[in-house]
Length: 141
Image 1 (cartoon, rainbow, N blue to C red):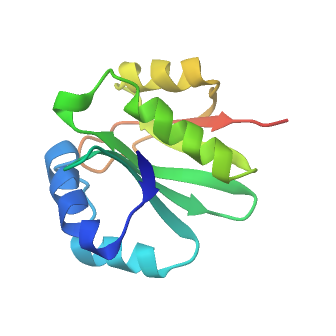
Image 2: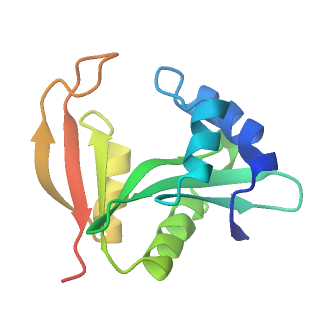
């Protein structure tokens, strides 16, 4: 089931953040601030008892930016990321933008298969490694 995150979900999301993005996770306070800001959205994919994945979005008026998308390690490759992207397409009419690590070819291919195209590159974007970011967009035009 895909639903919007609630305040009581924040600690579980932060725990997933720490596990999946150890050098760039959002804290409980950051997540709370996002939930209180009307330009941020957090959607989750859940089963009866747990969060399987989530997506954090920022509405920049002319584009929706994917800030993070994550799936629990033991829940990968079963369509959760696709469901979260489908929800994003369903809810928002704008183009969808994201940045992905240059070395993360699995993610890049996932986005390409979903219809994203590469539109740029940011050198030395990731502070922890100095790695470049690949800029991708899902263009609705």
